[in-house]
Length: 465
Image (cartoon, rainbow, N blue to C red; front, side, top):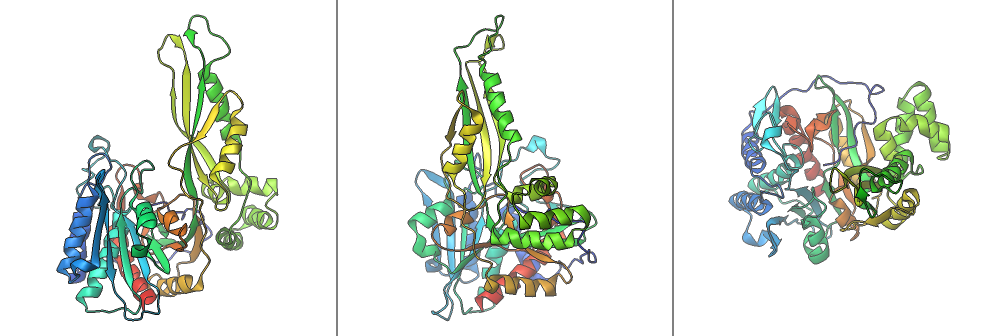
């Protein structure tokens, strides 16, 4: 999950602290599903998304779904990276289906790094701790639970509701279930729109809700390799042609460079709201930048906030370095991974050309495989934004909701390339440090999970009619 909610803070009014309601029978049933999913290891190295998907399928069938309503999928060379698609048929054939998308895989987690076992759900001090407690098993569990609740209640929506739970989102080199569905079974996941991760909400340290975000667009993630080679030699006789120095110069050039400011409809709407809500010099700089994206002084002020900087432009950063072969030898080879988040409308090749220019003639720059599709921003569709805001006003009164472009990337990009708009829905509030997502001791407030579940259930009901 890549959440862009750290962009407004002091300017936003805060609302009273949340109240917990966890004793309802439907919440207890949901907790059983959520706990089982979280405690099923789905890391690429040691886990099985296929097992997790099968467990969800068993629960769907127990609720009344037929075998024909559920399609498990995988490929022979990746038997543990499977997923499932489930379909709750609607009554109105004139309405195109909607798709609920979640990913089952999680980032690696080493027991020695964590204060608790990362694959045992622990409730402590008002939080659930575990790998995947947020990203993305909270939403995946809520989506599966929503279909179960519909079926158990005998609800037949007007619009067909589809559920796709996939694997491979967290690792670029893994087999990706969302990509496989888009390429091989587009009929199975065909939909008018997709509801996905990427939105959410932010709370402060006391648990007060500050902001809701609906993701309307995202960047594309792409890795590049910088490489340089030299003949090497004995370290007692150094020469200027040193692979490490040449690589370091290229990395420094990347650090010093800023890609040009750009706007989508979503980011323009976001910054317009931010400019009105931000007092003083900051708000003035935002307004100036909206009027003139080439205003370097305004860009420098706005870009001093790391989240706003990432929302304004393509960003590239060195993330891995490997160099040398012996401590007493001149390096014969040095490489670095440059991780880029490419702004919608810009391309992998265009970014490659800029990196080659920065790296210079002594460093080779290549785009790593796989090359992900170019991000396609969806429209600011009132059919999507309207219900999201109206229902949020009931569940989270007084909390502002803004459309945002995620500075990260999700599997939604594969559905966008086949013409299905994808929206990262709000509702699940996490701490301002993103709740340890991708790090150690990942956590979600207990109240945030159950309140988000109620909101998302009502939101799906509204879209499904």
